[in-house]
Length: 132
Ligand SMILES: [Zn+2]
Ligand SMILES: [Zn+2]
Image (tube, rainbow, N blue to C red; front, top):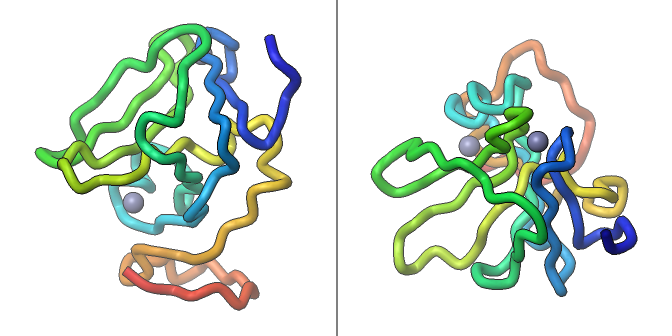
């Protein structure tokens, strides 16, 4: 296994490991109801890699078609949520669940999306843009 880095990650059990030559981009929090359900948290933390630039070193996610336009990948062994991607031709990124990165401390979010379904009891003091 390569050294843990900003561009590597994997699931809880280690069945799936991934790596990219690039740093994650468009890192964000998503407050939509689907991300909430699949993550189990009040919002999801997602880090983007350009399609074709994220490589699975071991294992393969199992995919769930969360809509006609998107799929979400998880580890079939431990259940960790690992990926979110639009499968439309114009989609540019595969997002990994940010918590699966080896160094999430080096991947700060740049914005919030899905703000219309932000939970009213969730109070965050960051200055990040909050949009849809
Ligand atoms: Zn696993
Ligand atoms: Zn979402």
